[in-house]
Amino acid sequence: MAVDSTLPSPLGPPAHERDAKALQFIAEMTKNVDSVQERVLGEILAQNAETEYLKRFNLNGATDRETFKSKIPVVTYEDLQPEIQRIANGDKSPILSSHPISEFLTSSGTSAGERKLMPTIAQEMDRRQLLYSLLMPVMNLYVPGLDKGKGLYFLFVKAETKTPGGLLARPVLTAYYNSQQFKTRPFDPFNVYTSPNEAILCVDSFQSMYAQMLCGLLMREEVLRVGAVFASGLLRAIHFLQVNWKELAHDISTGTLNPKITDGSIRERMSQILKPNPELAEFIINECSGENWERIIVRIWPNTKYLDVIVTGAMAQYIPTLEYYSGGLPMPCTMYASSECYFGLNLRPMSKPSEVSYTIMPNMAYFEFLPHDQSNPSALSRDSPPRLVDLADVELGKEYELIVSTYAGLCRYRVGDILRVTGFHNAAPQFRFVRRKNVLLSIESDKTDEAELQKAIETASVLLKEFNTSVVEYTSYADTKQIPGHYVIYWELFIKDPANAPTDDVLNQCCLQMEESLNSVYRQSRVADNSIGPLEIRVVKNGTFEELMDYAISRGASINQYKVPRCVSFTPIMELLDSRVVSKHFSPALPHWTPERRR
Ligand code: AMP
Image (cartoon, rainbow, N blue to C red):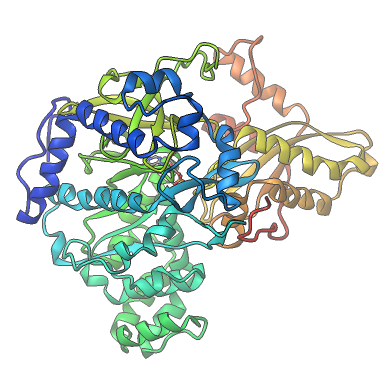
């Protein structure tokens, strides 16, 4: 496994004959990046030549890069909102795509508080499936014997809605798990899951998790890898076990399913799987009843070779906790994808999380890169369009924002991810995920930006008015020490009349008001998924934020340019803030959330 990661190297001979085709495909794609990209752009532009969008920019059927780059603007979601809204309202004319929009994928990115709607077409599902099919052949190069057991994956679907025009709107993974490609997948010894489809496809997150955990426990000896999409999902599963092990052990001991599981298809499927096993129940009680949950994953699933979770980007905050629960198992981050488009995979899955790089597959879409100027990160003007760099031309060590043009009709769309080039595999650049632009707080798929936080503070502060109190300064912190994680907001208050200070109850209500104001992904995680805990306000002593500034200046910040950080994570700063806390308040109830969009 010790490979010199600085050298472009072939992946090595396939571990199994059945992997040869996939590795050959990766080799071809990564050797011919530029020609594949040229072909992909040509196909996209030919396919969508008659769309309203491309016609608007007078592309006149051209399919070459130069014309495309000179005529088509770089856009954000907000720019495309009118077109997307028309499609959502039922306009079936070829607006962005000549192929019918099959559904909308709801991104975890938000616009005006609601999830973004990403149009997709039927053939994209095959492209995603193709990327998935490359993952195990790569993993097999590093971890032998994965066909000798099963994967315990906690996979979930979320609520679906319909747009006014009748198109489905749901997260990309919900679409994938509900697809024929997934539901009727042919048997693959390298992709056998402990979770039955009936459990994965149940929208009730408690019942789904319960059944998946139960199956994982019943098949504990067979489990070779434990995973979820993101690290936060796996930690939620561990927390679920902490809360529910007694009931799970009871089911295993008696061979009967908890009456809380009311979903008929899960009950039917579990009746085939669940048989009384008092010995296993005893084992689970022994492991789970102790205070110490260190290495619980390998204690319960002793044959686990790795954790299949993404811990790059916002999920890096969970690495220490996962190391604690798994006794330091490797955490390969296998792929990099989004609702707009699946991008690529990690060709060295066993590398340390901090060294993970993704290789973008040039067949997935047409990719361009906006050089990311750290000194002026928002520089992008319509008057002097920036020069976008092609996938084959990015430079080692430089940072870029990813721009994508998809078969489904997104053209030169800013994904919002900042990537750094760390090396090459054949001619294909490899990228470290640096960060997503404008994300301040994130616990799982929620992404809260500075403007949303500011608005939430303003909404909540209205409750303080009758107490003649205002918020003078604030900052925030994503507290993931406990599961589920929660947002912590530090407030410094100016209370004009201490005899009429806001009560505890009012400050608790402020927490709830903030939650009500946050975007729908946050509220869904709170209400439907229970994956974010109640928002907390910590009121700090007067003068605390001045001390924070003094501290920053003592560490070299310029007094003229000092701005209060709206999110903190640096330990000494946290310690300073926490040592000045005078009261703590939590949201007393759940905010409102329904699957329906507000607009
Ligand atoms: P969504 O469209 O809601 O699926 O979110 C997609 C976004 O999640 C991407 O644009 C990235 O910001 C983030 N993301 C996806 N995969 C990874 C990964 N492997 N590492 C870090 N961030 C990721």
